[in-house]
Length: 490
Image (cartoon, rainbow, N blue to C red):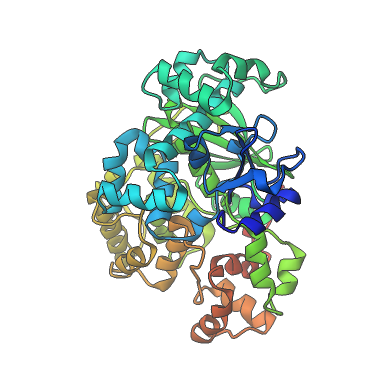
């Protein structure tokens, strides 16, 4: 979008927050860059130039605006809508792969050469993987500086910098302030941490956001010991690269309140990225709803409760296992099966608030489970053991870098995997916004009630007009039922 100068200028002049994260405005006279909704008086069009990423702005010598704080805008929805090389690379960078494994590790996961990955990112985003990761480290550093009392040396290494000098230089270059000055300027009414490694932050999103089905689904399917709904917040444990964490997510009108307790602060960037992915916070609800509203039978559902998101996951392998456990059983039965696995094979954790007890078992632990101890039909045992064996040995990859079509085909080749299981994993674990569930009982019931075709083939043909947002259409169709997944818990 940043190449469409006229459209970008209109967005900046109208201070349209819908475009925050889509592009960044760099002001040639002041050498600062802003989000489109920056509250200051818009500069003259001739003094504006546009970039596709904050990293590109920084590489061009611009510093972040102190007023609108462009580093806190929602991420571009492009990276969750697409499955090409650039989108997969951006999802991996957000997950901290460059910081942990370097650019060669990023390229290896994508199956391309380092040179090809760098060339593709530079062409589309104006910055290579190192610059993009550096911009992310600067954002994490600012968050830690402003929300924790940690010493600057600890913040430097927690944010992923290799040295304190690099940390100081980067913060000064990006924000035109020393780290100590950033802390001095931070609001004084920030919440105090309640436990070691704990911090509170705000997760922005594009409005509107309807929390009902989002948090309702997570709460209704919560696995005891791993997830819970408590005091208006969805809480769960997180398995992270350097340790573990516990997160509490609370919906508010203009942001998601996030309380994180981490065993290792180096996991902060990854934890934030996974929480945003879980709640689908980088989606563009206006684009989604406008397309679905064009169908006269869906329009009343969209108008009644716009801004529905797709509830996703913080651990793709975990969700795939839970999808198998939930085959042909009720939600309550699926939770019971998962809870037994958690109690027997999950890693115990300490929860300061007392409600959470375990991490969901790793694929390695599940691969060692004796199938005879599983209280399920023999055919489903075979499906379960085959899935976890493929996940454990790496022959099946469900990570953020996976190709949606190829992974779906690999899932369908496994015993016991039909279209429903493969598509629900594609929708909620892989993040495919166009995944569709025409065989789902709730979808077929909603279709019949609305006057849509009720047979899978006919409904799939009708749903072609909803592409590429069929996963969001699923949320609107599910919402016609009175199942607990559709309601925000009391």
